[in-house]
Image (cartoon, rainbow, N blue to C red; front, side, top):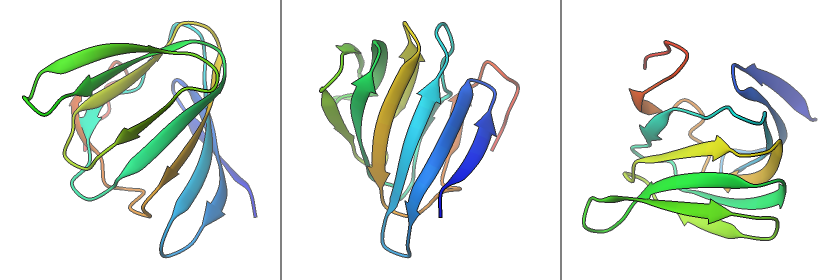
Length: 115
């Protein structure tokens, strides 16, 4: 049931996929980061399994705050909030979300990807 999806920053393993939720493990290589993005519908929660990372996350006032995350830390990222994950070291994190896999609005991307 597990499937691997290659990404320019590492890869993800989708280990659960239903019409109600998705479970993934993201593997982010040290020094790489994901897009600054938001989701229109997708609501997600992440938990760091190993490594250290930074999370840029838009707060209720529309200001992007920087959080450092370590193993065991978890954060909910509600739909509509801009966010970006950056790996300080190699990072593995668990992501559980609603099932909208293609719901990505990119604001900035280091790899030239667009919506």
